[in-house]
Length: 149
Image (cartoon, rainbow, N blue to C red; front, side, top):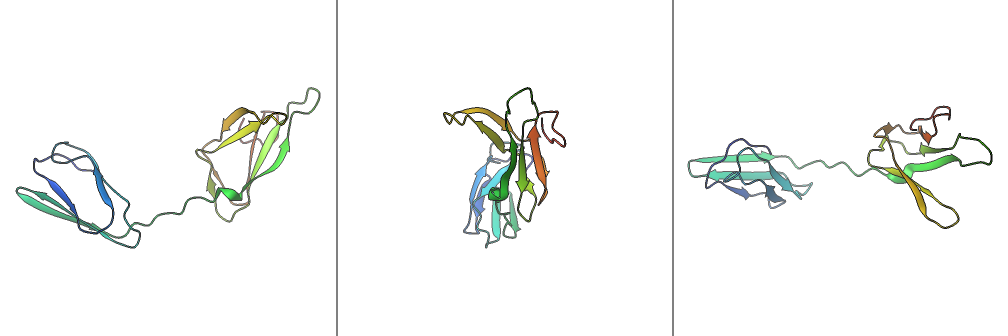
């Protein structure tokens, strides 16, 4: 909850019975943010801001939390590794087998050495949303339909 200004003596009461009030203290920090975390998804919240000359009540519905993405629907569908010779068309193709789009932001692809199980490269995936049933190709620039080089 962003706020502007501060007033000595401000106190915050959480009457919802759920959640923890934290963040900046409006009694000493001007222009800050109050954070309410851990609110039960089945309870609405009621907060009261009490100051020496004023009283503000803030209420809201129970938060709706999106479930975390199901990354298990992402599969490595096809791999073309380092073949003998001068071939430079190596790639890894990732398929979203799920029914919903998956945001690849924050995910990475690790390349492992098969002879000694050492990770020799980690590639941060581009921040794109992979549609259900779609492919994302990481490879060299010479690979047809490559999405990330």
